[in-house]
Amino acid sequence: MKRPPLARRATDRSLRPRSRIPAGRPGVLRVLFAIAFTLAVVALLPPMRSRVTPAFHAGEVADRDVVAPFAFRVPLSGEEVRVARARASLSVLPVFERRRDVERDLTAGLSTLLDSVATAVYDRSLDDEARSRRAAQWLPGVPKQTLRTALSPQGFSTLRAAVREFQRDLFARGLVDNAAILRRNDYREVVVIDGEGELRRNSEGLVDQGKLDQAVRAEAQARFPDDGARAQVFFELVRGHALANLIFDADETGRRRDVAASSIRGFYDVGKNERIVGRNERVTDEQENV
Image 1 (cartoon, rainbow, N blue to C red):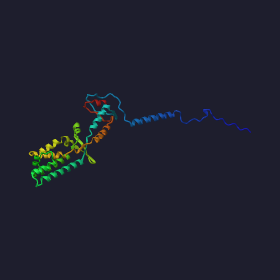
Image 2 (cartoon, helix red, strand yellow):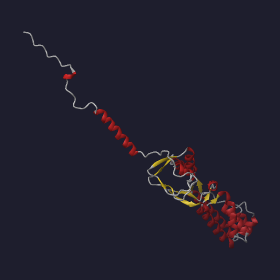
Image 3 (cartoon, rainbow, N blue to C red):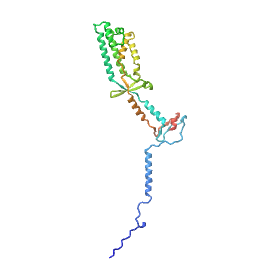
Image 4 (cartoon, rainbow, N blue to C red):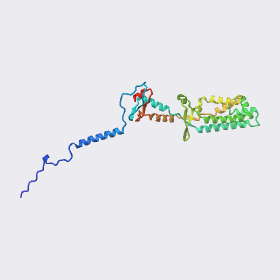
């Protein structure tokens, strides 16, 4: 018995079921998505300035305030960025490290020397000649006659106290090893790292290591104006036990200056309603370019 013929598949498009989605709907969705994406980008990013005719030109006096109608970003030229970064770098104060170990060593050394000299000065078994000869072992650069006069038992206690006091004063004021950087850029302050902390110091009170001799001689003359012998011994004792206790830290200063320079951006932002030119103000080239 013959099987019935299989039904032919419908191949005619007219016989297929029609889609419920109109043919033009996907294109409309793409357009709407593009518009939404564009609006989102514009909302997130501040508009860049466009070139418009300025209300006032450089050199003119504005007769009204000019404010930004919206927030925008003003790019800087390469030269402006270089100048701004150089200024930021130079605005960083020089950094010095306070060496407490230097102070302790020099203070202890001076104290030991003064105690040794005092032993000779107050030894009643020694005459003036023997006393000066023994003191010359510790102060070889001072003539014996000067030592004989300066190291009398009556005047030595005053000399001893004055030397210790001025050494402490030098370390407290700050004896710097490199004052050239202060003079070069006229810094009014410096940063001093002392242990774990740091503080700002007025540079006016700092003592330049290169001018230490002059400072000590002036102090000796002020303390012993009528006693040249004690003034000379004062100078020798202080000068031999005073070294820079504030050491310029070139690496840390350079690091801080690099950070300051790198923080300068190649543009600046103008906020909405921010005043650009004030009334009765003479317009500058920079204000016109904004």
